[in-house]
Image (cartoon, rainbow, N blue to C red; front, side, top):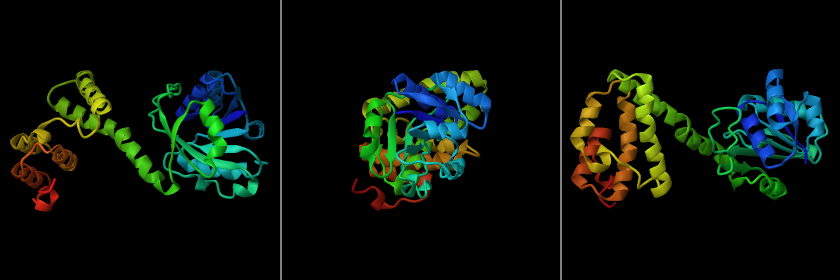
Length: 286
């Protein structure tokens, strides 16, 4: 089993480093940037390779480039003998269908994606990370998944965009929410350092609550308490984030309904504030 990487960015370096920690053989990296190839090779004690060398020397090839480049990489690979090779891309949104004509080449192609946020090129603490795997004949790659200690679930091709959108909400957009909080706190007179020191423990405690108690039982704040006037004051003081607050508040209210701690009148008032309506069908039987 010889593993090669096309792409030496955050995902390629980090995943290669993780596989190396699992005692799997990394033969090398190809990247358009020679400095990136050398960095990744040094990190994994492998070699910087040109495209031709990497494809020929690798039995397992991981394409860890930006999504829009994957098709071009694959078209280059089609010029080679790929019989018996296992080829993966690590896009969260794209499926293995990007590997057009792979059956004619007698190759085995999959999409493999970790639910993880790679902040740097050596973010290799992936032991507890869950991966999605998609493609035909998953059983053929189970030996690799087992040797790499990869915790995975199988996803259908048509669900890849929805799956990736879910990851964007809890990874990328949590940063966007933190930015909103920072902007509001700066208006209150805090500096950026104070904002991080204030926001982080709050976010961390919320994430811990989700881990310990589940999502539905982790909601706190004015909506789950039914503090109507507090929600009104928030909206009175928000400008560009007014609609975002209402959209997220509507979702929070759906969670609050499940907890069944609010009266129907309170739910109705909150729905009027957040959505401008009070449809009894939305809550009366919950």
